[in-house]
Amino acid sequence: MKVGIIRFPGSNCDRDVFHALQLAGAQPDYVWWNQRDLSQFEAIVIPGGFSYGDYLRAGAIAAITPVIDGIKDIVKEEKPVLGICNGAQILAEVGLVPGVFTLNEKAQFICEWADLKVRTNRTPFTHLYQKNEVIKMPIAHAEGRYYTEYIDELRDQDQIVLGFAGDNPNGSLDAITGVCDLEGRVCAVMPHPERASESILGSDDGLKFFKGILDF
Image (tube, rainbow, N blue to C red; front, side, top):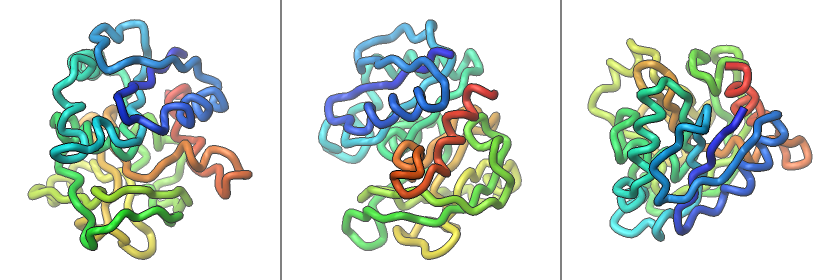
């Protein structure tokens, strides 16, 4: 299965995602920000980092690059799209997932391991987990606080993917740290599953995110 990994100036988790996808059995390849045609890929991952230095706000400049048109075409073709950290911010910025990821409640960068609850397993990336299963993955962001005006709709439509199981370190609404579109094929998560893909890293709970793409 061919999976495209989007690269922007400032991406810094692309190689980690490449390795995690290989561990899962996929055939990953890099895609630069100026490429529009993504039709050769069966899924897309937008990795974390600081695209364009997070100028204006996280994801704002990446959201107007040519590759976004290709990602929207992938969504129309009903292929899975995963955004991790900065990738999640970009998906929210372009409206492919609901809500926003904004400045943390305490204005500081957070980098720590977190216990997370899988709040839906209907997405390609979470369907190998049990619903309400608690997993361990790291977070690393300054703009990860989730907010939406439509929290009731998200709950009713089962669009909340991940939530903090313990402390709510960034002050997110309802402790949300991952959401999906209505169909469940576009998923935006602030935690880093690629950094929890091997037990030597401290947890391999995140590997199922990538194995799930293949299984889907």
